[in-house]
Length: 196
Image: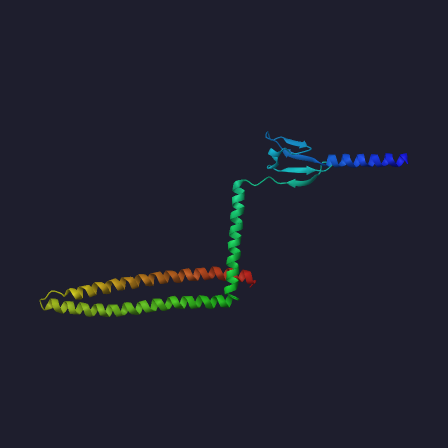
């Protein structure tokens, strides 16, 4: 009986000493010196440390706490990923296939082209109107009269409207380029998402 109690006490002592030895920590102090200790002082925890077993092998590595810049970068990366996920969800909701996306692009480009065509037609009509007004002004000058102010005002209005329509055409042509680029990006992403 005494033998069993002694063995049990010895086993508990060994178990306790093994557990105590297993609680070794390795960290770097303020001087850059690697320290082995039974605990890590609170001021060094944020730098990271290692937990060692009884044989000195690393059981666990606790990484250093991220710096404010690293936390900000991580936060920004998470926000960017959330925005990408939302954009992907919208893309998949709008287009079930690449063919759907291509049809949407064609519709949008056709609308822009229709606006350009209408503006060019209006410019052509304004040129005809301008020629008529210039002819009337020239007739008045040949007759020795001064040109009516209403004709001059109409000429100025025609020129202003022609300029506005030309700027509209230029903006629409720039929009066409942007639409093509935008749909090319969407197409590439949709192909990736659909695995095409």
